[in-house]
Length: 259
Image 1 (tube, rainbow, N blue to C red):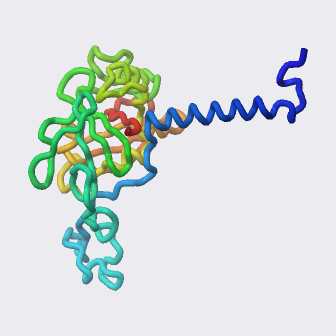
Image 2 (image 1 turned 180 degrees about the vertical axis):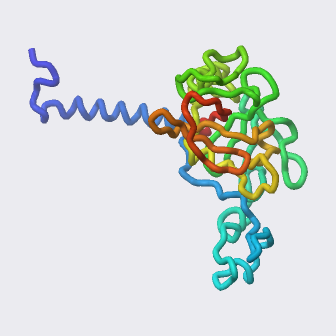
């Protein structure tokens, strides 16, 4: 008796087409259940420009025009300068929707609009990513730090996670089902993703919109990017990025794709 792999390729085409159709259907089902990131990037949050004395001023043509003393600065361009309409709220060109612990949108209040209650997660309406929001205690305590990946280190994360590394924390947050998550897809963000919520226009740290991301530390947060023995992190005191040994302790803010 011939097996499928022993038959000529043309004889196998109907079965192969069937398998490909099934695989495509499964991919479509996964896509329908969990939308992918948009591939779009946030602007920087910088809405002012530096004059000839390096003081931050309004981005007028005399200073930042193409013939100005400091031409073509970031504050002239992008969503920040365009003042776009938003689905949610947020400073500058950011567009955030705050979510409660079940994943439901929290109402906004005031002008500029801020969450009417402390969020547990935040959906970025530009990138279609959902971010965890740190808390004052418990599993997501904002003071907890972790070694990168499965590494052991000098990190400190209380009794909720053991060992204190990012792999264990990811598993714990997935098990908690935060903000309606059911696909076990909380993960470390890439460097580019995490840089996407840095607010470079802030004049005092942390460099993030604290109305939507309270309890943010002025320190390093791990990303999924790494080199041999080293992991990349984003520093939320001023938005720089650097590498540290994987056994070092840094903070963590997990992310997942939106719906």
